[in-house]
Image (cartoon, rainbow, N blue to C red; front, side, top):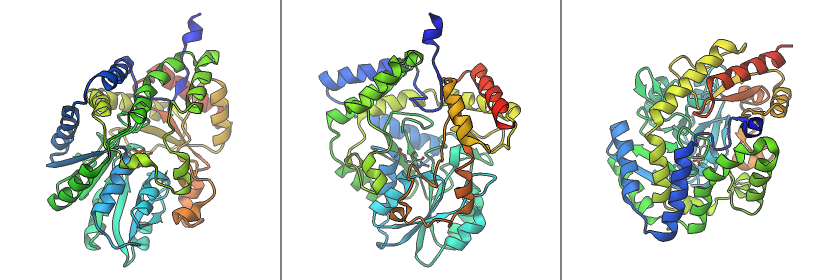
Amino acid sequence: MFDLIKKPITTSFAPNVQGDDVTLALQQVLSLMFKSKNNQFINTLKEWFCSYYHVKHCFVFSSGRAALYYLLKSLNLEPGSEIVVQALTCVAVPNSIIWSGLKPVYVDVDKKTLNMDIDDLRKKISQKTKAIIIQHTFGIPAEIKMIKQIADRNNLILIEDCAHSLGGTYQGQKLGSFGDVAFFSFGRDKMISSVFGGAIVTKNSSLAKKLAICENKLQQTPKSFLVKQLLFNPIYYFSLLLYPIIIGRIIIKLCFKINLLSKAVYNEEKIGKMPQFIDYRFSPFLAKLALNQLLKIDDFNQHRRQIADIYTKLIKSDNFGDEITIFLRYPILLNNKNHVLTQAKKNGIYLGDWYSTPITPIKTDFNAFFYILDSCPNAEELVHRLINLPTHINIKPDEAKKICTFINSLSFK
Ligand SMILES: Cc1ncc(COP(=O)(O)O)c(C=O)c1O
């Protein structure tokens, strides 16, 4: 009987969600029905970011991609200006660049860090380049000090994409505090989650004025969108309990089919179209979920370190980052990626496959995103070998050890 409620080991599937988040989400559904919204939650969320990053300005949006889109629009760059970004990223990043009338230019990654390769960055900067977006992939800090020097020398705006790295540091300084501006995601698979949501922090007052105008103009979020996001955590939480007896899988599939759950990347985004939620105001009902997660961020991150430490010690593979890296997911390279992913799934272990293409989840139409095949050979090779292991709060040390044993038994035969 108890085996029936033994949850699978998952990397995705509402990873940060605990019982209190589920209760809160259900309370928020009731509040949405019967009470007026409380903007204080938005203010408190902004205060948290301002205090944590020692900045005066924070703005919130419906998602990380919306934050990046409005940030780029606020820069008032000439249409067609080039924005440098790394390969091995989510399509949300180049999409936000393209939606704002700009052109993404892809820099290859360093195979040792999965972050931007400095030499290739120098090569990809042109007269048209106006900004660099630095992604601290999986929480592994990019060589941000050197990149800042390059940005300063070339008079480029430095944007830190902290979608993976809330709470991380580089040489004792917080990631997100090096650039001119940083943005964050509260997406379902990120360091903290309100299913959808994002923020920008900056010290730059003139940029802040423009961002404030954008934020003020955002549309009211429809209740139907909010209900979907608020039900996401409860549905996943309970479905995971029923996962081993098929019912959980059926419930999740059904909820997607009847549009009660929304995908992280909408289908239209895969062909470069902007979804409507980009223009939605970040809702206080979701801000409340994000705030509850922020209360736990130190515990989350300490846990991520503890789990990563197990992987570092036990997995027979190259390691990325170091002992102070806070991994969103723990990356490893294998020569039999697909075999390991499939076998793991058969054994109730759902590992991550970020990134499966240089602009995940785009599989074919790279031209539409200005990506030229063979332009980032390291990234193109890594996608065949890279898998990622869960570090989130719901993974117990014993489960991490089980993952290590499993991978070691399969991957080096
Ligand atoms: C590196 C990176 N940047 C930005 C984003 C966009 O964040 P969001 O999903 O909140 O729009 C993502 C999303 O997956 C991401 O992985």
